[in-house]
Image 1 (cartoon, rainbow, N blue to C red):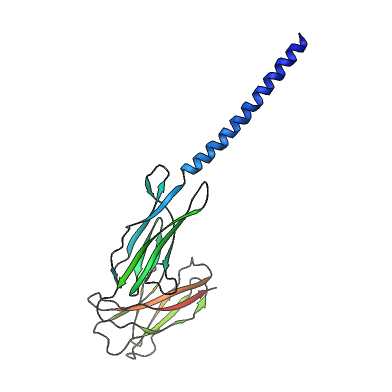
Image 2: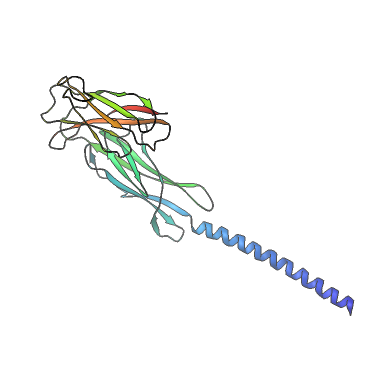
Length: 241
């Protein structure tokens, strides 16, 4: 009788052990399936076709959307770049799950979004062609300088730029960083940071945002007339320490 009881218990233990192992495997498989279900299979940019933009236009908004394994589309975060990197027709300001594209220079380029895929890993990407035109004949600034040209975040920078004497009447000169800060108005009046009035050299001071990471960042200067026509932007580089 005692021998039979031991045999029964041993048989029960033999049966329970594989069941527990199978249960654990089921939990693991369920996690893999859950991770895969939360991954996106495609990425697209909305709008999928960008209109021709003009220098001086208001920023144009784009969003990234991911396609889930169930087929539905939803907004999602992404890493954005404007190509070509050495001469882009504009820059982007990232605002949560969307970006604002600021057209700055006549030409063509590509807006690209890339996102990581959860669960099984990897990345998905999408791109949209960008065309920027220019209206009017406002001349572009030249000889853009920054003083200093390197420093810490929050640095006050003196920006100077030159415009030709035969520029259209009423032209305004503006400086901007690429982070969405308020623009600075450059003046040629011999006051404040501007040393000499009416010498066609325009000057202003601006403050870099305090959240920048070490490395190069750009300051752009452009001119626009009272009708809203704008020149191509001229650029200078500031190095954040």
